[in-house]
Image (cartoon, rainbow, N blue to C red; front, side, top):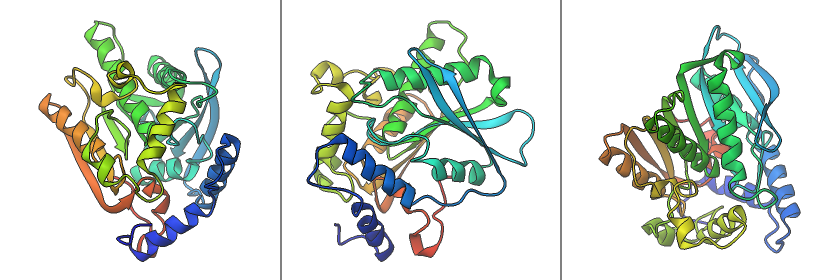
Length: 308
């Protein structure tokens, strides 16, 4: 555990680690511990929130979604399409339930959370296909979902931020091909996994609290169903920071964590966006680690505000 963490975050790390079983490699046990940990950090929903369950037809099966709507919003709604984190192998609608609920209330937007298929049972590109299918459906028939198509933002945390960036790039490419895909109006990427390059934080934060560089390599291999090849590492649908073209993308807000092997992914991606003329902002949260969203109720005994 890092001695640089403040008291509240040291407690958060200890609580989080209490649900893990370091000696196990059984995915079922890892998922059980992760789900218990997520439940431990859940917070009550606001009374000003309506929550709806549904599903979208996917390429191979129905994709569950959960919709969070502040009750004081009417008409077609500004919407955040959100993909959860969990290294592409963990999590779902319940693991990030209070995070997506808080985003809806604090930002005053509708949030549509997506329960994409997980690896290794469903390796790449299953998660990308599912996330794209939900994006495509809500943009083809936005009124069914009460989505204001002119105020649609896409986002996620960790692996979910990776998927959000991938979907945004695919949507841009469809525009360039002359098809009439609805425009995404912004990206919200939280401690994202974006790059296959050996960025300095991979070494400087190799043993960061809660998430280390070795775990990142393991998750990628499980996501792909194989060890990543040179071809994989150049594929923007796996590592969006490796795209050859960053022009004509929507504005991006990218929040990274200082104590994270992925700390440099956000700034690297934003530099590439800015060089292509895209409006983008990178914030590296000092003293925070990967997964800090779960600690938002602990910092100084108060809620840590979600990104503005």
